[in-house]
Length: 129
Length: 231
Image 1 (tube, rainbow over the protein chains, first blue to last red):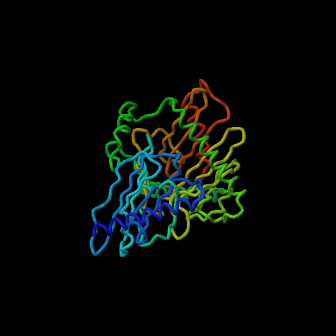
Image 2: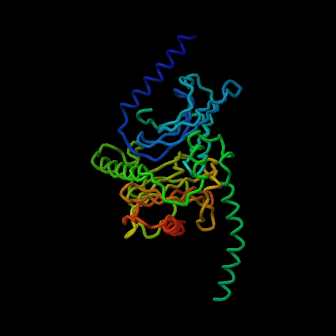
Image 3: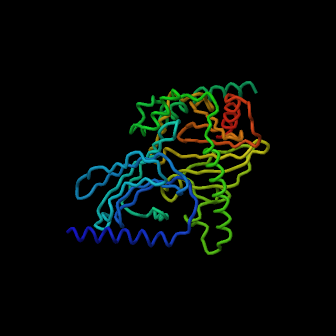
């Protein structure tokens, strides 16, 4: 069982690496999304690596008839905040809700909103993630 | 004519409370210790130092540097897109455009008067294939370069918890926070943040003319007057 988990994590990392090679670096504003039941079950807030923000992401996953303990990233000053269960997407059947927060220094906390999903249709494969 | 005027006033009076309530759903002024999820420790220390109020020009050259960096990144990304004919216009890898019409938005982007649009960048997330946010770099003739960030908070049940102590102005009746940053050369970046209806706005202005000796209140008045025209 341990070996199976390692295999899934390695597969997830390999897919991520391939996606990195496939992408042309680009510029976009801060984006946020969740993905489920493909590779990882995850909720991510992301911008280009040259931009950092105070970000906090919470991932809640409903699998096998129950809610798993929520993933809290905590406040991080970063270009990428990710609440991830690596490789969990391979087994399918999950409902993922992301809650994305940004603290704008001196102005207040922007709750960007929720990103509920059961798929990985928002295929934002960004580099350096 | 008189009748039209009376009807207009009635319409405004009837709608104003509704608009105010609608903004309140997506915006709430709270003290620092009641912001959701707390604050990073270093940020709480900053608020303690300033009392969470902004009445002077703040020495933060990185804000000016960051504006230039993002403007140039958008410019270079658009140039790269034009030179790379193999990339489809709808590809998310080359997410800089010259018009709002080129991207699918889940809301109507605000009109920015007297502005020449340079770059449009989608932001937020996608709902039914439509973006919930947009960044626009533009120029206001005779005044300077600017950036407007908009998020439609209704799309994902978002909300802006505004730092109550920092509120120092209003934009079209909505509570707002205006700040002025400067670098060592006297270049300022004027900024104002507010929520109107279901939309969060952050307007940043890099004025052409360096205004050494001009007060923060004067800068603030200018950026707020520009914000008043955005709707």
